[in-house]
Structure formats: C-alpha cells, structure tokens
Amino acid sequence: MGNIKDLVGKVQFDGDRVIGVPPEFLWIGQGRSAVVYRLKGTDIAIKIFYPGYEELAHIEGEVYEKLNNHEFFPAFYEKGEGYLTMQYVEGITFYDCLVNGVAITEEMVQRVDEALEFACRLGFNPSDTHLKNILLTTDGEVKVIDVVRFTQEFDCPHWRDLKKAYETFYQRRYVPKKFPRFFIEFIIRLYRKRLLPI
Image (cartoon, rainbow, N blue to C red; front, side, top):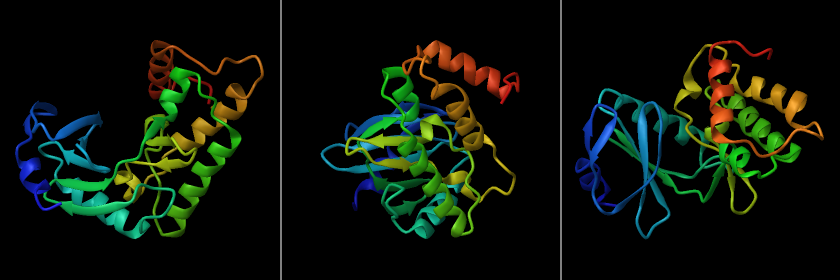
C-alpha cells in the first residue's frame, strides 16, 4: 500500500469534478464531498475528498477506527492526507436494489438497524444513512458505508423515514419492487422539499 499516497497525489480536481486520474484507479462512485476508486487488481477502495473537504478524511478515519472493522461496515485500512483506504465491498446499494427489482427484505432492514444501534453504543449519532449508503453484498450481507457524518450532533431522520416508507408502502403486496430511476429521483426531490407525508 506504500504507493497509494503517490497515486492519490496524481488525481486532479476542478472543484468537485475529477479531471485527471491515474490508470490504476477504477471509478466506483462519488458523493457530496468525495470520490471513490478501486485500486486495480486489489480489494482496496480509496476515498478521496474534494479540495476544501480534506479534513473529513481525518474525521471519517477516526469513526472507522472506533467501529474497529465490525462486520456491519467495510474493513478500514488507513487514513492519509485527504484520503482513506478501506475494503472494497462487492455488491449493490439499496438504491440499485430498487432500480433493478432486487427485493429489500425485512431481514436486510433489520441488519441496518443493528448496524446503527452498534454505532450508537459506541457513542456515535448515525446520520446521512440513505439508499446509496447501504450495500447488499454479493454474499447477501448488509453493510453501511460513508460514515463521515456519524459525529454530527443533530437528529437525522433519514433512516427513520426510509423505514416508515418501507413499512407503509414498499411492503404492500401490490407495490412493485422495481422502480425507474427518474421516479426514485422524483420521490427524493419531494422528500428533500418536505412535500411527502412521512
């Protein structure tokens, strides 16, 4: 893992847009504050924070260290200047489960509850737990990713509201288990504007 720091240094940003990346990196995804790559030929994921957000690497790294590689979360390897390295987890997000028609079971929801309860017992305040931050692995396990906001103090209702929507609507027999992406994005926009009765 000695050359990861050098590879990270080759990633070029224009704000939150990546304009240059070493060929050893395979794009996985990106969010509000970081982009994630897989190091080719390994099971290592590298989360690189955008310019102006580098201090979040230290914060999230400390959260992962306290989670201590628990089964509910990806294994954590190291934190560097503006980046983290962790276990690459093969799977799909709950968001992609909805897009692809993969049923989200009560057991999967229970596993997320257990993960967040475990984090609470360690003194964290799990926040920003949404469809794109929960993975169903190829082994059928559930893992919560992107824990940088677990140290926030305000009460985040995201998971609570998702569970309510799951129990109220998704579990009904006549509700489809596959939704077009545009429909999910429309529902997310309504939720953010507080226009949904949840």
